[in-house]
Length: 245
Ligand code: SAH
Image (cartoon, rainbow, N blue to C red; front, top):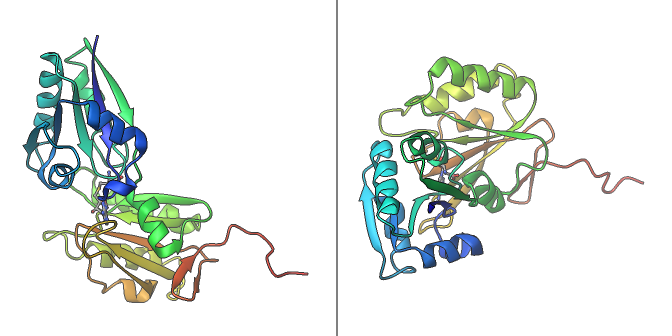
């Protein structure tokens, strides 16, 4: 039976790929992916056939990958971060229904909440959730309902897709919803270009997050009630009774 690998390549640098992901890509002949991510890989995995498709052509990308694997070539399809988190792993299983002779193996990667969390310190040290603010595939009402539920449950939250050119005001709208439940001085952080050139981070309050500049390579973190700023880092305590006698 032919096999296809769905690989999470981590946030961008070779060092933050898992050893398993590196070994799988080394062994592959064809690597399929979105142009930006494939460009990050080429230097480390020379001599492969690279097939790229632009954004929004995810289904076509999956089909190309299955067709390559069907021709007997060892094929991987790559996603940034983890392939199961706002990535293509789910769609690969759906499209895979048309290719029952090809087995799918998912190789996990370090998602932006984890790699960005490490840049900020320890923002997700307690119960947390991930919410994408992109309404391309999810109705905005659903996103709003989940933001409210996360705020009510006092989860620390990592927000993916905080904005794009077309969705400039979404982060502001999300903050306004969270502010109905959470204090204006809730500790928040943003990380840009995690593990890529130009990586930066910033700590702010929920109030100031409303007008923060973000783009499609930014991940946002909103603390829970206990989250503190310690020196220049964002820490959500696990609950150890440190310092108490
Ligand atoms: N599968 C990816 C997420 C894809 S959704 C993962 O697991 O990380 C795209 C969103 O992920 C971006 O808008 C941004 O919010 C976040 N993201 C992915 N890579 C990033 C990086 N290197 N730096 C900052 N944010 C990133």
